Image (tube, rainbow, N blue to C red; front, side, top):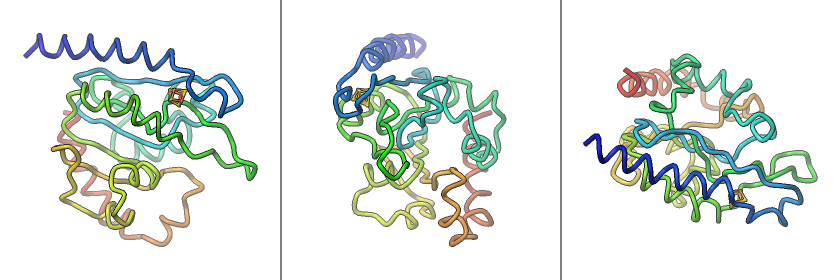
Length: 200
Ligand code: SF4
């Protein structure tokens, strides 16, 4: 078993090198891409969001902002646990910050990044549960489903593992949270209970 982990970790390190060297979207972005990777092969939880923010593009640390504080509160974990690479493997549909639209919002993540890199990460990491964050990531994996139904689905599976779908914790996502008070009242306690099983 230990050897299997070692092999997987070695494969993952090779994959990370390839991801970090990727510049495929340079022309589309109009600036130098900065790919982002975080986690080890034995991580029990794989968290998949949309794309790194401008802040992550600059700092290289995921969810080191208000969204991250809220996310850790939702999970019921402290920063030490959240940033423990043996507990959380943190990735996204696109591995680079994609730049801004004319309206000042972040561009949609290039899906080719997920096809090229994320699928291989999912094959290599030994996680036991997925957490999918935000509607863009949810649509990539569950294109036929309604986002809100996914958030409240207690039996959701992804590639033979249980999966949780969450709204994006960004302060700009207040409309969805306000429209669905049952998320914080009913769904979050369930989510915390599930996550607690994987962080002990
Ligand atoms: S977003 Fe993905 S495919 Fe595009 S440059 Fe970054 S790592 Fe490469």
